[in-house]
Structure formats: C-alpha cells, structure tokens
Figure 1: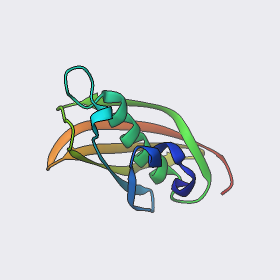
Figure 2: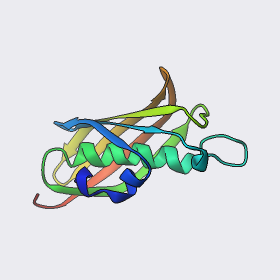
Figure 3: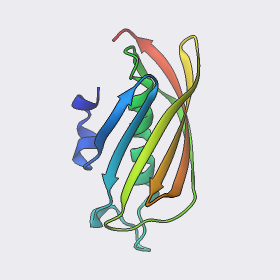
Figure 4: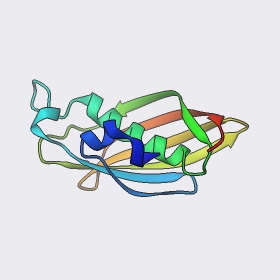
Length: 123
C-alpha cells in the first residue's frame, strides 16, 4: 500500500518497518511545513501519524481505511527536526480496529494519535 501512497512520499515520509499490526515511519520537517509561529504545522504531524496508522492497519493484508482519528499535540517541533511515528494495533474485532500512534522527536513525545479502522475488502 505504501508503495502507491504518493501523498506521503511527496512529503518525504519514509516507511521504516511494517508488519503484524505495527508500523514505523519517519519524516524530516521542511521549511514548507512550518506555520506562522515557525512551528511544524499540526496538519503535517497528523499526516505522519495517519500514515503510520494506515501502514499498521493494512499490514495484515485486507484493505483497511480510517473510520476516524484524533490527536493530542504535546510539544512543538520546527524546521530540520526528524519526526518518527510508531503505530501499534491495540484491538481488532470483526472489521473494526483501534490503533495508537506515538510521534517522537529526539526521544521526546510530540503527539499521541488514536485511529479507528474499518476493513472494507480483501487484499
């Protein structure tokens, strides 16, 4: 799935690992990703977490999409920072799943994301 994800690739997001309901992705914050306060725009942090979520919930094969998600921002980052998102499946039941994603920068938690998935078809 990630091989066809042109949106994530256009932002420089790299898939580091995926399988068995988990995934790790990384992105370097560029000057185009900062807001008027010189901080990484929250939308880019969300995209990174959402990409990790997508890779984790699709790692078992069936086509799975987001049914919803929310994020809590805990610290700011800026141009040049390298963000890493770690996604982990918490539970699946039928076609639904819950995944947690932690976004880190230099050992500090930047954001916590919870995604809700829905399987919609075979691989």
